[in-house]
Picture 1 (tube, rainbow, N blue to C red):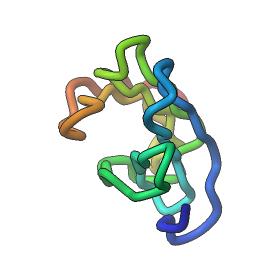
Picture 2: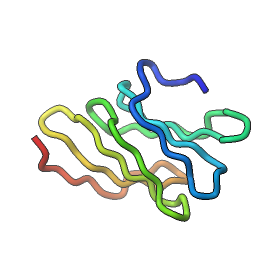
Picture 3: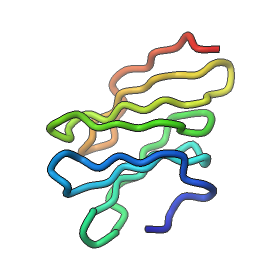
Picture 4: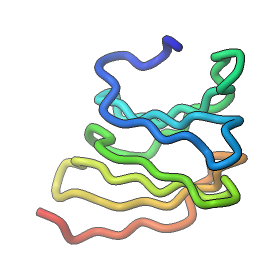
Length: 92
C-alpha cells in the first residue's frame, strides 16, 4: 500500500478485517481495501502529522489524533465518506 507522502505514523484494521486506516506525517488519513491494497478514501483536515487512528466496532466512525499546529487535536470522521463530525482541541 503506497499513497502517503511521507512516513506512516499509525494503522488500524476495522474489526471485520475488510479495511485498513493509516495516518501519516503528510496530515492525511487513508482508507485501504485490506484484501487488494487499493486506496479507497483520503481524509484531509489535520494540520500536522496524524499520530494515532482507531475505528469504531462497526467501522462507521474513525477517531484520529494529530500533532496539529497550535495544539494537538482529536477528530472524529465518518468512516465511509470521510466527512468530519467533531474536533476536540486542548492538547498543547
